[in-house]
Length: 145
Image (cartoon, rainbow, N blue to C red; front, side, top):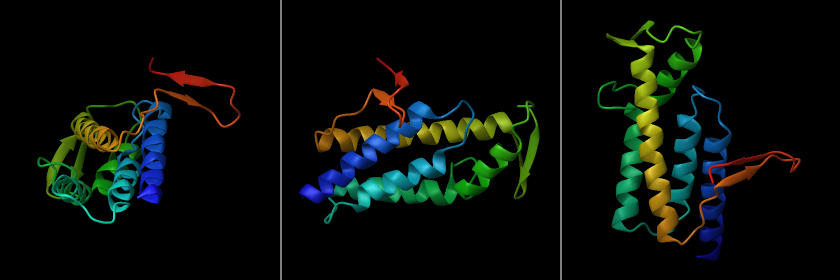
């Protein structure tokens, strides 16, 4: 259990460090979802709550959003490749057309849902959620406080 808790603490810290330091409009959902998957898989025996989280995270990774139904990496790549200042640009994915704003909204909703899952897991294990982040040199400080 102690090793599981250490991994969960590490994942919670990394998750929030990425969120705190990410630039606006930087697609990070794939990274965040992999951290949440690591957090969930660190537990040897999943209770019902964790099983539901695992199913939901797997579904998000494969389908992104109920309105899109495409793999998350495809949506992130489409957003990343088209961020050149025209947010109303139309993008064809599969047999549908989306605006860049719509796709970014879906990615934002995913980040919000993943953050809620991470907060619930952190509460379950009494893991502190970092509100500040120091860069590696220890010089700069970014804070939500």
